Amino acid sequence: MVRVDGKPAILLSILKSGDASTINVVEGIRARLPRIRATLPEGVRLDLLLDQSVFVRAAVTGVVTEAAIAAGLTGLMILLFLGSWRSTSSSSPRSLSPS
Image 1: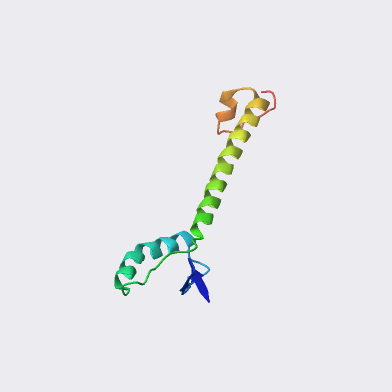
Image 2 (image 1 turned 30 degrees about the horizontal axis):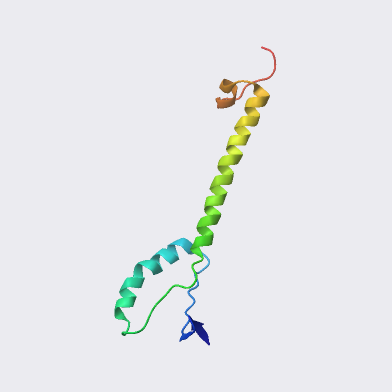
């Protein structure tokens, strides 16, 4: 038995398949909700109780942020060891042997 706000309710869990994107599935469901709500009898309410895409989006944002921090710190360390912006930003390899 499920209750929402103290009233009896029906819970319908929607699970994605292994190769589907959580974010795409949730966006698809949200896009269809207005059409589904329009077909419901009067007095029936349709609500989302849990949205896993919130956690997926936060994880993706965290990974991108950490990657940017790692890239910045790596550049800083290379700058500290090489001692010049030119060497740090150069994409071609430099030989350390005397010419």
